Image 1 (tube, rainbow, N blue to C red):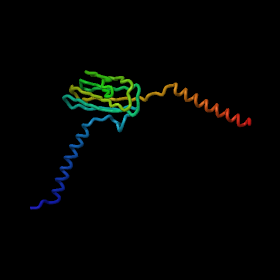
Image 2 (tube, helix red, strand yellow):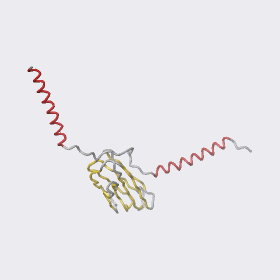
Image 3 (cartoon, one colour):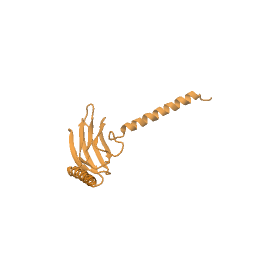
Length: 175
């Protein structure tokens, strides 16, 4: 007895649906800094995760497109007890921040960060119960400000150029 083509097609569709469902679950579990497409530039990048129960450990890595000054990271746990909250610099192989037991929102000053260095954020802990358990966080990357002396130097060079041009014009009219 031959199988009908329609039955083969429905089995194939069912297999494809099961496969796509498992792929979408895997995608939901991957953790990324929101808005991260390449190396980070100045701006705010959010990260979060919901915790359904038990213990958890999440890790994010990022690099910067350019040097950055006065960077901060914010973490707000909700119905979870954090066991570890760290920011690690792979270039110098040391923690920029290493905290534990954070139970209320915390803002940490990371200081200046360098371009091309991989930084790792790690958040781990345990579920305390209740609805909406998890945490929200944000990494704020600030640009390196141009020193006032650079603006002063640029203004002086423009002034010298204008003065030199005017003097050359005066010589041309006198001749």
